[in-house]
Length: 217
Image (cartoon, rainbow, N blue to C red; front, side, top):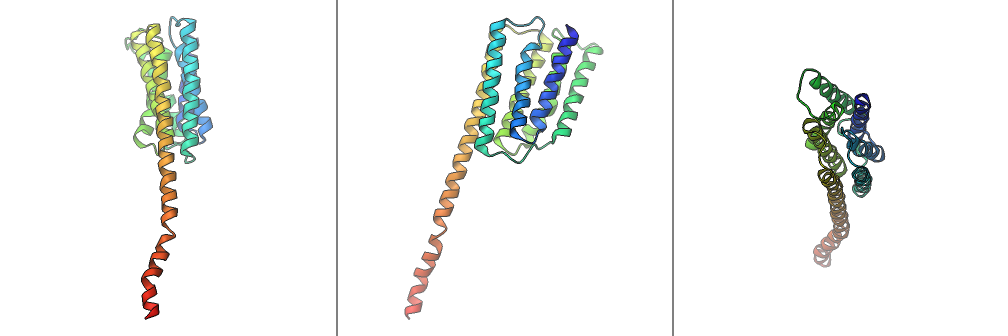
């Protein structure tokens, strides 16, 4: 069972690296979905089936909202870190988490949760500080929150079912806020473009009106 949890933690760490480092928004959203779907299973004992089902539904909803944010923001600039750097940071965080329990760090939860949580934090903190689009910032915040939840589960133990339900709702609400922010930014940008294009043709007209008396003179 321990090795299965470590393997699941490795999958979460890999998903975190892809979520932060992938250039395309669809690939990054897929990585985020992997992180959010596998994270609830990093618990010993496992939560009840209804709780797991709710977390999976919340994960799918959060991933959909992040993808919607990418489409609204027109994200095509890619990750600020790059895939290779993000995967390296995730691997380093995962290795540190495995080594921490080996040297006697007290933990009441599975080692895989600790390693995956540190991997999420390692890859999510830099984009939070330098993300250039709402989608990239939102993805980093979602991964960061999920990493914090994993660390709580690793250090304290499996949280109660109600707490896991609240965590799932928090992740989905955060993704929804990111989608709303991206929509507002896109609307403001389009309104600014329309205003600029509408104001542009008026300058020559005003100039001609000023110059017309001179021509008559």
